[in-house]
Structure formats: C-alpha cells, structure tokens
Length: 161
Image (cartoon, rainbow, N blue to C red; front, side):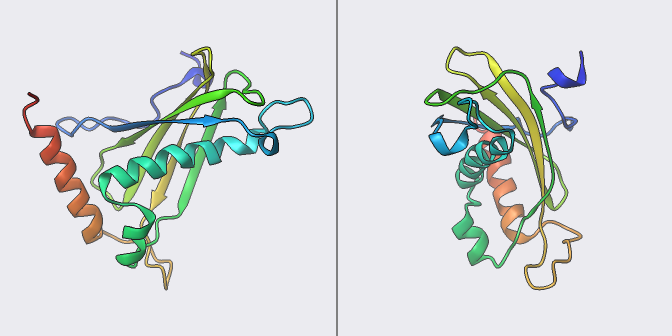
C-alpha cells in the first residue's frame, strides 16, 4: 500500500478499547474554495477539527471541560494525504477515530469522504497536554484525561444489548 493511500497512521495497542469514532457532515462553503471551486488544501485541517471536536465532546473533553480543568492540548503534529478534490457546495463526511494510548496526548486519525462516497483525504493529528501557563508538556495524563479514559474503557467493556 502506498503511503498516499494510508488509512491507519498509529499502531493499535493490544487489549485497548476500540477507537472512539465520530462522523460529522459539512457543506463546502464558498470561502473554503479556491477560484476553481475546489477546497483549498489548508482547509482540510479545519474539517479534521470539526470531527475531532465532536469526538472529544462525546468523551467528555470538550473545550469547556478543558478550560474548566485548566488544560491546554495544542496540536503538535498534523498530516494530510489528499486523494480526490472536494468541491463547492458538496456535502462531505468527516470521520475522526480517536485512538487509545496511555500518554498525555490525543492521537486522532481522519477520513474525509466526498458526496459520492469516494475517499477525498486521510490524515492524523497529535495533541499534547501541556500546562497552559508554562506550556510544559505533562509527563503523565492529567486527571480529566484519565477520567475520560476510564469511562471509555468502561463503555467498551459493557455488554451490548
């Protein structure tokens, strides 16, 4: 498989819960496109952020919760593989897969699908938890992240009815 067609960027840890997967829809707006009506390459990270925000919210780590816990989690690494163009007024789906890890970080993989179902882009982001005052990274997971992971693991272990 060529790196350009990659869909899994991070190693799955044996025994860890399945990724938390969220899909959101987005209608491509005029301001997101170039003069040819094609989504500008820099806008894909904003699409990723839409889906990642919803995944974090479902885990209990929305921006309000991060702010209340006096946490910051800036993106320290981002990557996009472009497969097919997105166009003006197209209704696209962005899927975020938040992957389990034990570090003070969030690893998220993304897939962007065109209206016809074809994969338009894939990629990933890494967010590191840092002290918002000093910008020093945490050596271990902050309490909010640990609590969210405990809920994630518990929900993954609950029998499905």
